[in-house]
Image (cartoon, rainbow, N blue to C red; front, top):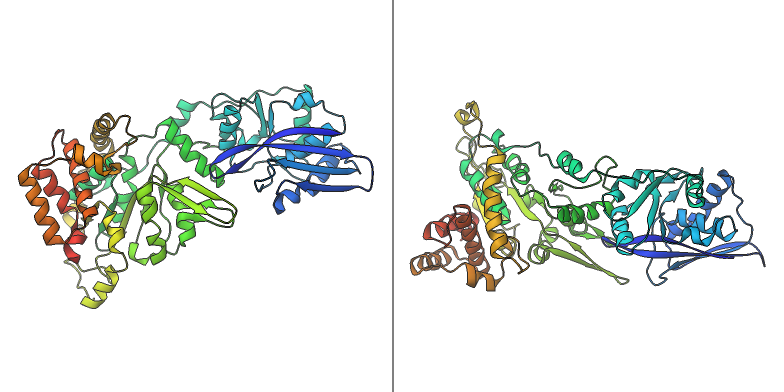
Length: 510
């Protein structure tokens, strides 16, 4: 007898419907075959399904069983098909009517005792179930909160295979899972780190405010202990709050990597990712035999912080160029090509020299000019060109540390950032651009026009500092953001002067 159950699988960060067809035939010797490009985890499901059926009071048919996972031209991986395969076998044996399975998405891994265990990627599966117009999802209880975030699809969390059969036959009707989105946002969008904790470093705070207002990349240079990491961790607290669409898109990436927690099924705060400098290029960008998202995608809509920038592998840093420009990562393999979103702010930190004390008046630098040149050459010019703001972070003096007064809180800085972002959203409405850092050359010509005096200043800066055309464009973008922060419609010479000051490494390496 033939039965069909609906399930889902993830490709990239989006899901697609998988039709699980089960054919049970009494003729011939018993065997169990799974077709439709299954990986090893899918093929192993036969043993989990056999034990789960037996331990929940169902007979496993000693017949010819063929499982087809359609569409058959896409490779299937993972253990999420255990539940629909088991239910399909039960239906093929006549214990369930096919009509009971119509419009129901079944997803879940089975343990040997029949418990339904959580799987990765439930959020994009819920989005697909809603878009496909399915009437409900029957999924593991631990995944129910994650799927219930999506409005427009009814989600039922179950704990055992027996619960699933009782639900389908109508013997029991559990309450659908629900999530208070507003309450979840209020709970999960709280930032613990505040700029009020930072002593001194006012010009660095100003640079980070400009970066947050325009979505600009930042490189901080300073001796050890000057507060570079402390400042970077507080940047997400002054960026605009996440919208629901941004939260869903970011959460989908974390869902497919299995990083969403049952008590936090939505990423409501902008992510802050800080990988160690020993990370590989595949770990940073994404990759693997079946491509998985890397740190640049996990920091989507947030901040990617690279501490000790020159210590990262050269090839890992160079592969950052494409996502910094395109705001997405395309990973190509022989079987498939997958694109992951990667719209993040890059914040990097480095010492001014190998020993770290070149700019510290309290310590003597022991580096030779050759050591200094080799150290800075680890960060290539093309990568530096893509970083809009270079700012020096000096060592903090004791009197600044001993000052009992708190600095300006993040909430006040965020108000100014929000006003500047509102100006940019109004300016670029309908153009697919959301902040100044994303401007294309046509936007620069339209919105970053300068007078003759300011143009002369730019020409002198380009000549004296040896700036590339890309660096000059980024100066104009930063100047546009400074003007927006200060509430001016036109870019003035003071805006460009401040933006030029944020190219300290160009100045030192020229």
